Length: 137
Image 1 (tube, rainbow, N blue to C red):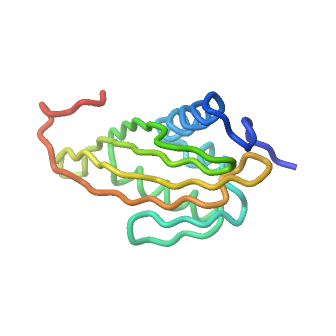
Image 2 (image 1 turned 60 degrees about the vertical axis):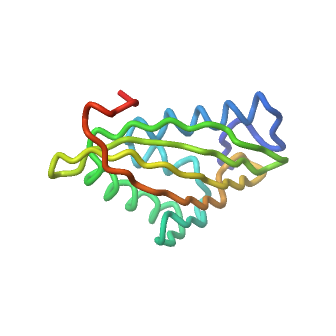
């Protein structure tokens, strides 16, 4: 059986660890690595897109990072309870035309007993920025 430590129920230390692990994985921009943190049947809402299943997550991430160049992410734990985490985040990227953006958002995560994310609901807003306004490098 697949496991992704730490396992729920989370305490402050393990919740922070889970968030840092997610940040590190997403900053790798490795769709295969990131997708392995989710259940095979994971359910996502990312902006207005609904994604179901690990394979669909992998394809979504490949598309995302082919358009969001020089992607850099910072996640912060907002709250936790048993097998759920709430996270706020910001990330920066450059599109194919060279325009920089900072995206702000919130995610709600629910994990199964094996520490795999079964549900991810993300609300995200993008703000065009100048390269000189970048905070995440």
